Image (cartoon, rainbow, N blue to C red; front, side, top):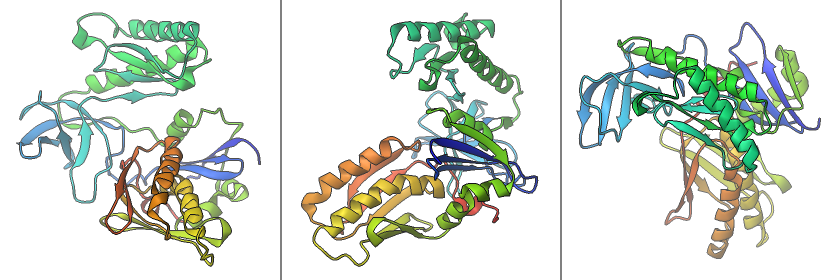
Length: 359
């Protein structure tokens, strides 16, 4: 199977799921939590109430309604009793307050609405001046029609045109901006009591939003049999096991703990001098995909196959290249005295093992 296929699972007994396959290989997976799961989801917007300050942390604790506590770091303009609109920025570690931002963003297929940053900006990857002008005009027209482009600066709303907008019809771009503006209005007009104002996008919405560049060759819908036919369930079942195969009989074990995600890289039966570096390069190339599909984040510690210290820069460069195309922000921290390589990964997804209803 060549090209990109987006498979949307439609099964009344399961939450919404979406799978992205490139040339027949599963490259991304989105699964909604069960309906009874009340965990605040990434991008959801809440009206909050500032409950208390934590000066030692440079942070505020907020009531998000329904017994949910939020954690806002770095804001100097809010004080106890204020009722800002906030957006879920990351999933919380178990038992901790939910990290939020007081500058919500609303993401669409072609645009990102920026309520706290007036003006229209176009992705730097869109380089043609005429195309940039066309997109800017379409976005400004949509903002003006929504009454968000004029008036005092604090009342104006801006937009960023994403790379996916390149070549899109002006009407489609304007419609996307208008839909996002409607979400902002829904959030603002929802009253002052703490609680959810705009729900998080579900897996299907996210799939259409994030997997359009490149444009899918096919978008298919169906029940669990469709995923069987495409090999998605087999790939998912493999992800629920720690062991991830690598070329040449090598493998890595990916195991989350309460403190970190441990990745143990093994060269298999090859004990030659070059095997360690070869295996480690294969492991760091495969790492972004397996972390993304497994929904793992936080502190990542790699226990690599034996190799010389002089090979470390080459390995780090390969890892950073592999991470460039990954949508989840991941930083390479460096090497420990024991020779482990450490990373930190933003908590943008929930672990697959928590979300997946077994087929």
